[in-house]
Length: 383
Image (cartoon, rainbow, N blue to C red; front, side):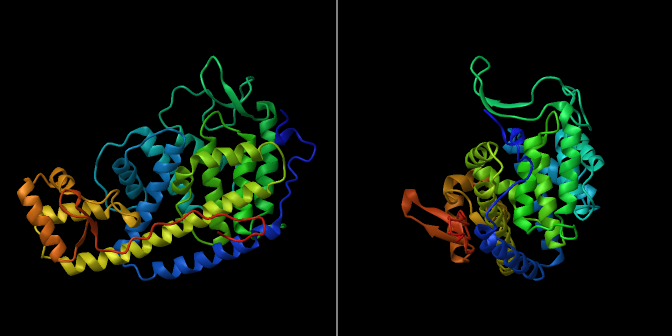
């Protein structure tokens, strides 16, 4: 197998810009709508949106790599780094590291991408690790850097990156390209195109011993933020996680050559869906505020606890709806009390009942906004 970086045209990527034109326009339009929506949020909700967005990206970018982190610890660390009120819980190195990297990305999106920035991100990500030889520097191992799956006895090779000795030169070229393709660079590229190329280009070099996926996604978000001129809160990693299998398939296909059309169309669809998810979250926060304001002083402690638990699920809702059994588990109420509380919540129009008798469930009385997948066809149309 000959990989993309082994081809004579590496890294002179090609793509069909006409297929991406509508997607680029939609992304910029969506960014403007999002900026307008945020203005309607009060300071508390803007703070909540920022913390939720950064922490969700931290958690999901880690989960893509098979690492499950504690949400409360990540959020606590993010709040402290942003100078906001936080609890004093003890945060483990993994949660601390990814939180630091995501806050660094949020705060310094406009700053130049350099080896030093990448090394610092890597040190944050590998906080507490003792199993790595190269922390805060590019890999140096003489062994091939391979992406494999399957058993130790019968591994399946998905990709092999350039040898470690080639990484400094490849990364110098990558960083130069990233600067040149920036909005104020000598050869600027549209937002989605630049972010998509940056992701695949960096992943193809695979410069670190570990953490390449998380850093690659951070670079994509940095590229998007630079194109928009402000930090982006879009749920990129969260959306990739939902379509993780198709992401791996798209990357494997793209790693075999240097025409990026298919990869960029896949990435653009993901980015637009991520943007729509974040917009739906803003609308949900507005509806949630109105609902809680209307119900202030009317709910008992159990009802308030259950409602807040449901609202925590965001615009896509409590999976399967709330049942009387769930209510008992959340609140500790008896079955009879749960039945009375739920009936009262329906009467107060805090919840909507769905189904009957044993199959009855309850949903929050807010319009839910699940976001559908976005695909770009051969003609560049969004479906």
